[in-house]
Length: 122
Image (tube, rainbow, N blue to C red; front, side, top):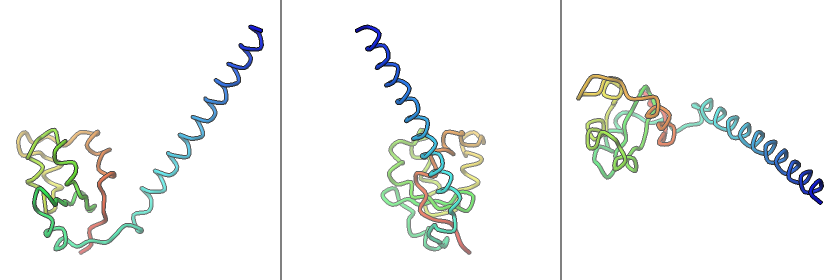
């Protein structure tokens, strides 16, 4: 009885590991495909971005990408500082924060794709 239970548990653990490995691989490939499909994103002008310049509707541009960060504002570690970038190209603010001149963290950069709504066009 103990031997069959041990074999069954081993099989479950192996299949769980294989499933998790391939599931992660699929998710990573999907993320790569998403990041590589910039041409599929909506093309947005700076004029359109400027129409979203208040705390209840805040879009900003960072490095040529347009983000709707409205839902992120309450979670922003810098508080209301994020509002300085609403409705404009906030690349310089993002790369050199007004309060101390440092760039945003890698964590902040990882969060950006979650809020992307398009790419900036001239």
